[in-house]
Length: 321
Image 1 (cartoon, rainbow, N blue to C red):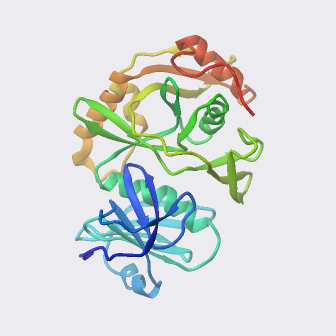
Image 2 (spheres, one colour):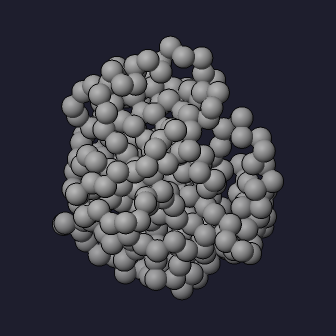
């Protein structure tokens, strides 16, 4: 049991993946905020590693296994529904059974554990709290929310930055949280953080703060006001091309969106909800497929999308920065 959330004079707060989050330690993208009476959707508490070490050897189900920055990462679920995120020697994160408190034990300085916490761990908690997740970058524009869907390395981030250069606001870097609200599917923003290729310059001189250099990427905090939750208006599927860039309108159905939802195999009871969310996204959005090759310039690709759908659906052609 997690017990009551005790009052804290000052917390670090953010909204991410549909959750109001409070933490008793500073985190990139969070702001200092005085405690109020409302309980957050998720409370992140710093604890000593010894407080969590005993959980490592308890029987658990392996739900996810990956590697981040050369360090193994495992998601391990207990019989009572608690979840241990084991980032080897770097950090342990423990989500209590009611999924409202995340205990955080860090063994080293640096940003690697923060990147895993603010990305994979948080979107996993969002999924376990009932949200569905779309593998996409997204930018809020004056004409509505644009989601850029595709696998890692497809160019989602560079196209998102091009949208931001044209006045858009970062909504999510890699994962968009989705929730059914009546007849509509509403998207919820991620944290104000991005993994940006080193070759990409900022969209304005003071557009972001570099938090870390990671290989050929930079982890940056984007200066923005958090955008409101909103439906997705446009979906751009990114695909490799062999004969030059091409943008075509494709049928908007659940079949086009469903394969890009992020989930775990043990959540089989969520299939109906996932189908309804995928159908809801398709029902409310214009959908295009953008074929591209590595040498295509982001501004030319976005111009192609605008020509296909109309600039009043995506973004103006004027760039800043």
